Length: 368
Image (cartoon, rainbow, N blue to C red; front, top):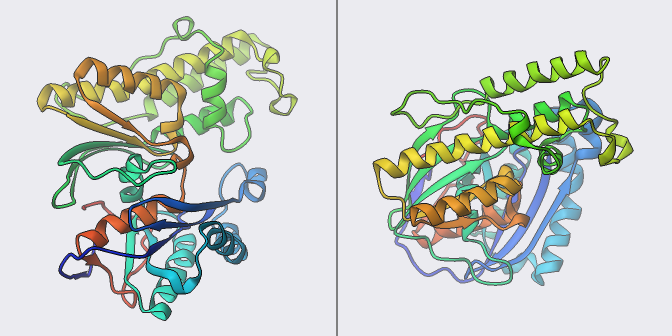
């Protein structure tokens, strides 16, 4: 991941983080202790929502349009100037290559012009360590060992972390759809606006999961891999059956904003879908814990905001005697604070990148 290694020395100064891997333009400033002094995120939802998904070309243009105001707001909120920045961290991938190029190019230029260290950060690296961030205080230290569960619209990953070396080993990935992608597609199918995952979670709280059960996907008894395409297909077929019985309408008007207008069978279906989706994650954690002790589990990514998941992993930790670190809600989604933090952790190990040669990559394996 890195292209330069120097002797580790204590870092003093401020780290500027840049995140533009998809459709959020984000900038953040952290101090040397990992305190988040500012975290500004500019959403492009209004631009992409009419298309039901992110339009790559539009996302790139919006990043260029939003960056001046976002970076200015982040510096002002942190109370620092450009001359105070001691290092720059920017996302290199994975993501939309056009969007990545905007943020990475900005980061490289800022680093080069200021003459400060540059860190090209893997997006998953940012999420993985984000549960160590704290609201209003210094970040926690990286444990001696940790297992990370990263769940989002693009990722469903189980990772092992060796704290002293910073080495990360992939234990399991999704074989098809990511969990957040499945939530979004089911939500879109019932008429919810993009992105739909968070609203599916909210509506699922109103349903009875026992009224519409779904199978929990299992690959093989000895495998940890995830799979959400089957569950998605089950739910879509069930929605089709509901539509057939309801005269062609499965959901309610999302614009109405009236929870009472949603058919009971749809709410039950969303609840059942959510329960099966989360149960698969818990199943894999149980399998892993049966094979090896898990002392600490970090849970991060956009789906880490899911209400049921937060409840279930807390209970799993109590049952298994594991310390569960849940990412603060404000850092669940894509943000630059997590990128700056990942960069800070690498700075402490004396690990930096050459801004002249770091490249953006839409698909990139994760190895710490």
